[in-house]
Structures are given as C-alpha cells and as structure tokens.
Length: 162
Image (cartoon, rainbow, N blue to C red; front, side):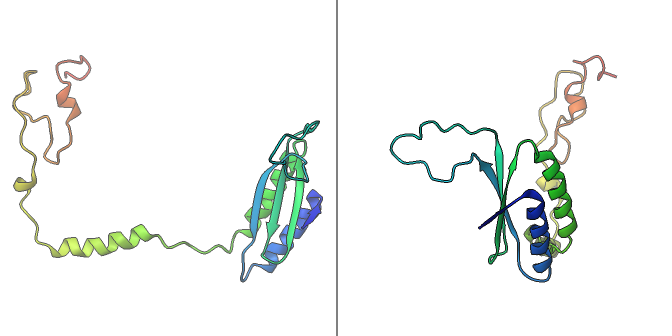
C-alpha cells in the first residue's frame, strides 16, 4: 500500500474514480490513526507511547490498486472540503436501487381490490359508554378507531371547551 500526501491522494483517487466509472467499484475506508506501525502485544503494554495529535487514516482501493494517506487534525477541514467536492463530482454514475417495499405494496394492492368489501359497520369498534363531561351524544372514538382528542378533553380545559 502506498502512503501519499493529501494532494497526491486526491489526484490518485480521482484517477481511480475515472478508471472505475464504467464498471467496477472504489472502496474508501476511514479510521482513527495514532501513529503506531506495529500491533499492540497481547501481554503487557507499550511503554512510553503517547500519540502527538489525532490523525485519520484514509484508504482507497479498486481491488487492484491501493492508496492511503494520513491527515492530521490541523489540516482536516481543508482536506474534508476537497474530499467532499471530489466525491460529489464522481458519484453521478450511481444506479438507482430497487425498493423492495414498493414491490410488496404493488402486489398487495391488486389482491385487496379483488376481495369483496365488507360492510363498515361490522369492522367498526364498539361504542364506548357515555361520558360524564357533557358529551354523551358524541363518541370518544371516531369510526376509524382513533381518539377524538377535542371531545376527550372538552370541559376540562378552558381553551378546548368552546
């Protein structure tokens, strides 16, 4: 893997995007980097290791060529702006994803239309007992089973009692 400077990384990333525009993929990974080049041993700790500042390691590959760069916290905003502009410019060839929910809904709609409709009175919820706040003639639940909030609180709140 080749570790490049930030500007060189962006130029090589542009070349990867151009090469994979018609077919292929570019994979980009980002992770925190503390400057270690060797793994931490299982037993014991590494003595005297203090990371100077926070850094990010960016890697990009198309399956054949691998490039990477390390971005320090001081230059992160400048690099992030350039990187986002590069991604926006090269993500125009993405394919629209087929939504699986749309196919389920279209299959369910004709099936529902084919079944005969049942009368609305059979599916309606039972009417609640009359309330004591002066709205005995109106049900608290509407015909579709939802609560009628205005009628539930009528008489208890001065703003809603009109």
